[in-house]
Image (cartoon, rainbow, N blue to C red; front, side):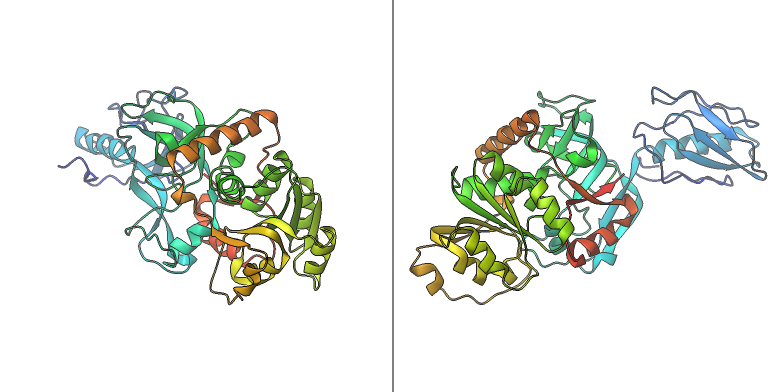
Length: 417
């Protein structure tokens, strides 16, 4: 029998619980048919199996270490049956739950699978036990097949994972098992109980931040830093407008801009969003659903205009952005959901520019610079990820729907595992 093939369970009824949490699992069962006691699993806190006595007919036993539930019929009477139990548990210990996409389409194509093989860390790779993962708008575009970069099917979405290092591959020196970490990219997808990431995409998570906050750092903060510094060339004393400032990237951009000494203006679509923007570094907040808000922004600059605009919805706002720019002003395109018509003349007199921002295009040196700056922000205390709506792991489809359709963002959407 091949190692990747699930063993035959014979006449014994066994059902593995989907809430299992330990990759090492419990792979040794002693021959005690009446109680099905086991030797301790490799989980340190395990004392073996505890048996549920409230059920009749089919017993249900639970490993005290990894909380895996195994259901076994009373009809166990020989060593052969016990052998199959042992083999089945050993097989399932190498499996994990993950969200899988087998076809591009609506959020409903996100499917929870319980029989995905736990990946192994290769050269300069890190295996992470995921506690929380962030949901980004770009992941909805990829899932829908609308993004330039389309993964091979099937795939697991996500780049923002936070958790604990389970194992490291050959050549990894800066990290070890047990380290609390977050990622800026993954090799196997973040919407899973375990993920593989390249060593240079894994960063230590300070104890002052929990895993949900860790899942809100990667793409939002590294994108905001790239937009403001690497592409926008923002300088202290200049005025920045965060157009759509209450979401994950928006909050990050507000905090970074304030730390960089910029005058920070932000917009949101709800009163709650405006309050969030002000609480995270903006000097002034505007409701972009109100008529005439552009005029109010220009008044706040004494008619001089904006030096740098970080734009989250360019297919709606780009034409207005160009009209708000100061001489030599720059628009940084972070988000776009479709086409828009603009008048190029709006760029000519002010010699303004439009620049697309893609974290995927950052060089290793740029990533290192961003990581160093952001870690300093964590140490100083001004980098404080705001977690918005939280969804259980198996409700990823609803999270994908809401991140696009919700009337107003209030922080980073996170899946908890």
